[in-house]
Image (tube, rainbow, N blue to C red):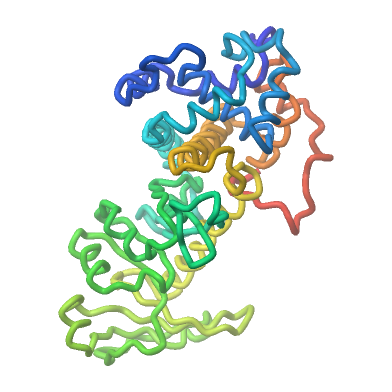
Length: 389
């Protein structure tokens, strides 16, 4: 029983602290540190994410409101905003990236058997990026346009559980297709992406690695039909064709045949053209795969609405990346807890309850079983659910 411990303290039990200490030693996180070790920095920043703190001053005031409970939550004393700001500024952001990688591996194992609603044995990933706008005068290192700064999150989302398998944080100038160079292709996996990733040389590298892709074709794509397969027109399949590229450089970049599927959405009437190197599944499965790409858009919307990655506590590149990676850690940690405790609540509801009860002393599982959380829910039009509730 954990009746004598706060809910926040119990949440922190799911962090692999032994592995974390090895990472701290690797990156020298606690070298010549007297006031705020890395364990307390993570707890403070995670607390800020969970309770929706808007600034370091806000975080300092909130933690200082319950001084008697700080020691039980893993803090030796009250956290000063200046000390935390210095830690975010100076400690290598790769420490938090490495912690996120550990948590992601654990979460993916937990959700490996999740059903994504498609009759496929392949692992399916959705690849996309999102832009986080910044003020150029405050973040000059993140220059994007003449009067605008931005960072971009390139994310490869495992659709089994909506767990990010890969994240790269860059400035806004980095093109989407370049993210394909950073991903180690997984043989047999299916990568679903939009037209921004239509780079034939990079897509051919996926093919050579034994991976599959599904993307949108561009209107001006120069190609010719090699063979037409039977089309399931009642299901919205206008045409299912094997094609070859015509352009000199395009043929050089992708010398093999491709599959082109013309699809008309029965609900909206919108016509889409998909491009893939997978010839085995039916054309309807290709269309269904591309529809699943929307999960990565939901992921971006969810973390922007529910975590602190749009307003930053520091202005340096290290501080921004520290905050983003700790936010990712909190997201994955919540997914792990939800799965391991078999909580019958959505991830949104889980964080909403925790945000108003971090200092409460109660058994973690029971807190989410007995709580009347109906008043915390948004209207269906606004709430985003990435996990089955």
